[in-house]
Amino acid sequence: MKKAYVFPGQGSQFPGMAKDLYESDARAKELLEKANDILGFRITDIMFNGTPEELKATKVTQPAVFLHSVTLAKCYGDFNPDMVAGHSLGEFSALAAAGAMDFEDALKLVSIRAMAMQKACEIKPSTMAAIIALPTETVENLCRECTSGIVVPANYNCDGQIVISGETEAVNEACEKMKAAGAKRALVLQVGGAFHSPLMEPAREELAKAIEETAFKVPSCPVYQNVTALPSTDPETIKKNLLAQLTSPVRWTQTVKNMVADGAGYFMEIGPGNVLQGLIRKIAGTDVTIEGISSLQK
Image 1 (cartoon, rainbow, N blue to C red):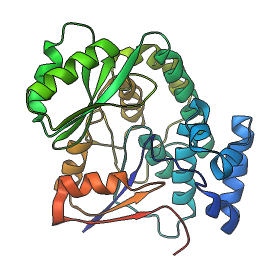
Image 2: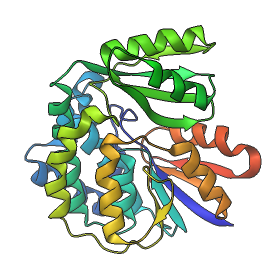
Image 3: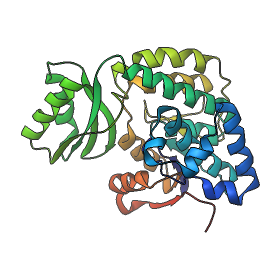
Image 4: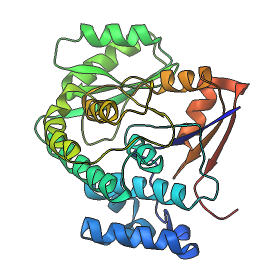
């Protein structure tokens, strides 16, 4: 039975995150202090003592989730997966944990990515919405039928749960179409903009230079990437897919199915929250064992 380690994305942050790691493990403290130096501000103060609102700040959220996940992975005593994957931002965590990038380089990329995405969000009013209990093909077709602007599927989270992304007016139009087609819910999300859509093209262009200048190595195990849902070990392929991720959908449903097909019978979510555990349970059912770790404390 193969082991798959998975890493959560933005939205899993919480006040007090990684504080126990910092206080109980010397290596964790060293990594988190190094992060403060790299970022140029004490992100740990916000992670440990900040409010939920402060944790939502653009320069904080993505690096904070990355730091919690990767610090935990590096200090965890038994990090030897057969394969890894991460949801959106979590793909950076997966790559760093598997050694495809150095910790410092990965953190810098995450910070650049966060700020570039924020700038892209400010160009045009945009948002995302969760569509519940509607067939995938129906969601895709209804998005294509919208005439008020760009709207596309952004996150294929599990069967019956797809997040769409695009211009605000187009997302609202799509939500009405989804509800009319029988969706259980079509809920506009409280997010900064249209992530994983063509509206992120300015961010992709900004991130391209940073990724090209970053040294990537062959990871210790295959990394299943969001864009293709397929395993990658070639550094150039990893870089190309990582960049395309900003404007392409997160194919999480297919990623998990492919990991199971390739022998994964045990999944561990490493980092804050337990969202991925729930999604994997819906995708793979009782065929796999699913656990999570957010702390070094037993």
